[in-house]
Image (cartoon, rainbow, N blue to C red; front, side, top):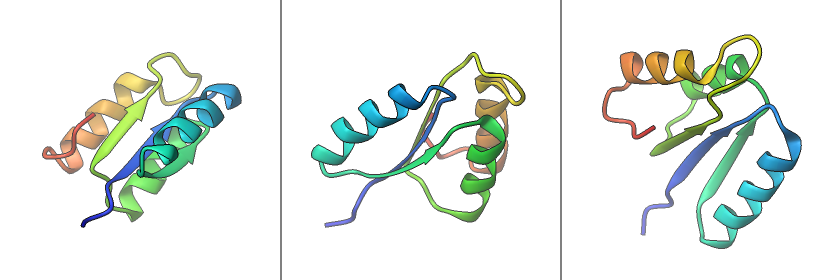
Length: 78
């Protein structure tokens, strides 16, 4: 079975930890990023089946993350 990987991007630590716990319990491999910039950097280097992002963040917000992900790999679910 292929392990499904998720990139989770949020600038609130409690959200990252909570979502990570839930998704990991369901068997997903989760990578965490605490900013849009870090998330996009990880996305460029890795392969993710799904990206979950907060929309309102300082710096590179979620809308920018969505645009960049879709431009780079349109098949990736966001």
